Amino acid sequence: MLLVFAVNSLVCLAVVLIHHEMLIVLQRRAPHLRSPRHRVLFALVGTLLAHVAEIWVFGLVYYTCHYSTGLGGLAGNFDGSLLDSVYFSFSAYTTLGFGDIYPSGNLRFLSGLEALLGLVLIAWTASFLYIEMRQNWDKS
Image 1: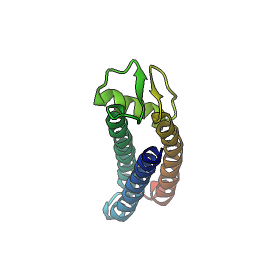
Image 2 (image 1 turned 180 degrees about the horizontal axis):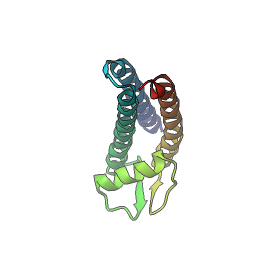
Image 3 (image 1 turned 90 degrees about the vertical axis):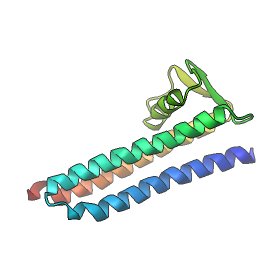
Image 4 (image 1 turned 120 degrees about the vertical axis):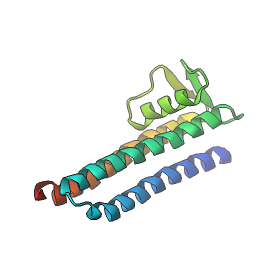
């Protein structure tokens, strides 16, 4: 149980830090672009890349845990590949819900946390992009 708590905590901390650091980088670098609309586009692409990186972190953890004993696994239409693990992560992160692949055992906790974090981080991105658009959209 302690190992599950540690894995869940570390993964959640890692993706929040990835998101936080990406937003800081985007905020610092965007003003150097000449066009205000390019600043908004830069922020949009940067935040999308952050989300993809976060999904891949979760996918790598699902893949690793699936082949570790006692940490749960993925079941259903799961072929054991890294890409299937990332596909499942996309479903969980975006709160689409489980379909053809679903978690079993202790990975159920991580998938629930991923859905919660995905919701929060997507909302954080929306707030960030709203501010960027308010500051830059009508200036060009």
